[in-house]
Amino acid sequence: MIRLGRTLALALGLAIGATGATAQTQAPYPNKPIRILIPYGPGGLTDVVARHYADHLRKSLGQNILVENKPGASGIRAIEEMVHAKPDGYTIMIGNISTNCLTPILLAKRMRVDYDRDVQIVARTADAPVFFLATTTNFAPKTLPEFIAHAKQTEVRYASAGIGAYQHVNTEILAKRAGGLKLLHIPFKDGGSAILRDVASGDTHVTWFNITNPVGMIKAGKVRPLFVAAPARLEAWPDVPTLDELGFKGFRPSQWNAAFAPAGVPREIIDKLHEAFAAAAKTPEMQAVFVKGGMRAPTDKSADEARAWLKQEMETWRRDIADANIKLEE
Image 1 (cartoon, helix red, strand yellow):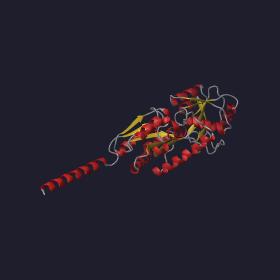
Image 2 (cartoon, rainbow, N blue to C red):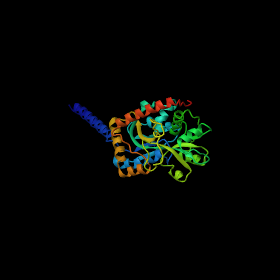
Image 3 (tube, helix red, strand yellow):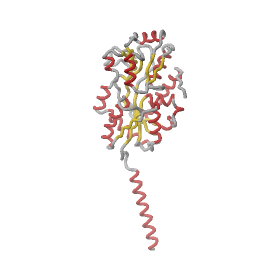
Image 4 (cartoon, one colour):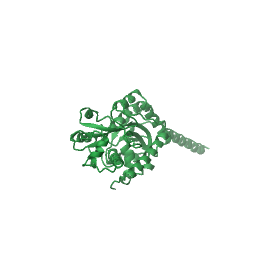
C-alpha cells in the first residue's frame, strides 16, 4: 500500500508538472518581443511605415517590437530568414510589391523556399500611388505622349532599384503597351535617394516613385511627373493625369506595403496580429502618416480578405509580366 501510494504520488506529481509546463508554453500570445524584418535599409517608405506601425503594436500588444533591417537579394534575404524562423508569430516581416509580389514571380528559382507554400499575408499596411517621373535636364518631354514619341526616336534610360523591382517591371509593361518601346534599364543598388539624384541630374531620364519622396525635387523643377498611377487625380496634384485618362486602362501599379508571416503560424495568432495592424491603421497618428505621405489606408477587414486580395494581385502581375515577356536570368 505504501509503495502504491508513493507510485500514485509520483504519477500525480509528474502530471501536475506536465500541466504546469503546458500552461507555461501556452501563455497568451504575445508574451515576448516580436521581430519585424524589413527587406531594405533604414529610411525608405517600407521602413518608415513599419516603424510607425511598430510604435502602435508595442502599445496594443504589450510587448517590445524589434524592427530589424535585412536588405539584400531583392527581398529574398528577409523572406528566407522569416520562413526559417519558428512559426510562432514572433518573427514577421513588412515588405512591399517588389519584395513580396514581383520577387516571388520573377526570382522564384533563386529562392530556397517555396513562397506560395511557406509565406502567408497578415495584413495590408499601406498603399502609395506612384508618379512616373522625368528629368527636366536636357529632356524635353512633358507629357506621356511626348515621352513615347521621344523614346521612339532616341535612347531613353530608366532607373530602378534593381532587376525585378517595381520600377523595372512597371517600365517594361508600359513600354510594351506603348507600342514596344526599347528603353535602357539602369539598376541602382543604393536605393531611392540615389535614383532621384541620378534622374534629377539627367544621367537617367525617367523612373517611378511614390508620391512622397520626390516632392522637393518636383517643386524645385528638377523632375516632373508625367502621370500618376492612381484611380483618380490626386487632390494635391490636380494637374497630373492618371494612366486611365491616358488610355492605359487596367494597368494599376502602386507601391503597396503589407505584413507577412511564416505559413505555419497558427490562425488565431494571425488573426490577432491582423487585428493589431488594423487597429493601428485607424489611429489618428497613423491616419496623419497616410495623409502626409499621400498614402491610402488598408481596407481589408480580415486576414482572409487580405489573402484573397494578394492572390488576385499576384495573378494580375503574373499575367502582365507574361504579356510583356519580362524574363530574368536565372
